[in-house]
Image (cartoon, rainbow, N blue to C red):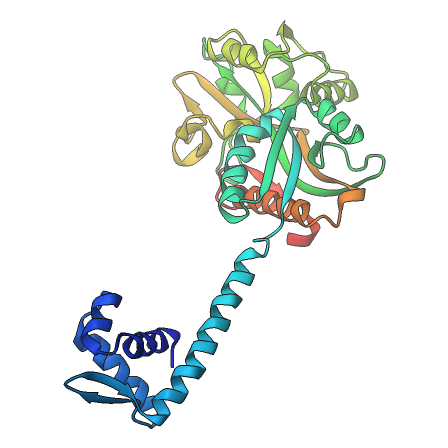
Length: 335
């Protein structure tokens, strides 16, 4: 027995005829008649007396009329109570992201949460990795992805992902291609770090974490970096190496918006080259960039923050699984 059949039955009695009820309900009279017969079959009793004047209830019909009115009134009240309840967690969450990860993660994350949890408002701060840390320490952000920072004062920090660092740029005269080594896994080729250091380099300043990683590796091996241009703007750096002014070091996440032949590596460009273009994973030693998920300890139990945290983890892992982010998953809860 469904509520629609009960509503039809009440409408028939209150209208006094099947034809008038069908007109008011905007249903065909045969369909309405079929619903009443089905209801009588389910209850095992005749509910209506039919005559030329219309319909009247039998004793069973009169009893059902009273009971059905109460039942439908209760159902309507229940629906209103449920609809007045908050639909999922509500609140605002501020996420701090290193700017190289923002274009990869922020858009899909916000779009997904707007669909699944419209009552949660998302704000994104994207900046240098050092400023992301500061945003968390100053409590201007609730959730952050930290670079190469496994712990930070009063924050809940867990490993999330690890990616390789690449060297890329235009091989204008063809002198760099012989320095490449095939990758064991058939992906983009490798280049020894010592060779990469000798290339004309366009790098960001020491405020940037990737510059710090490269310099630390060079200092440990007493290698000199051949820096020909230094600039803080990622757009300027990209413009310089795209026009052949030098080579740069970049993490895998920044390759996500590169051309398809570059992202797909060996499948699209077996040698790692496109007319003079070099993209190679740094090796001997491999340079790695590690990401950690940090949460403000005092908001750890906040339902909205927990939803956003899980959504961020899910989004990052989906990108890695789909091959859109060449990284290795490290989070302990989802290994």
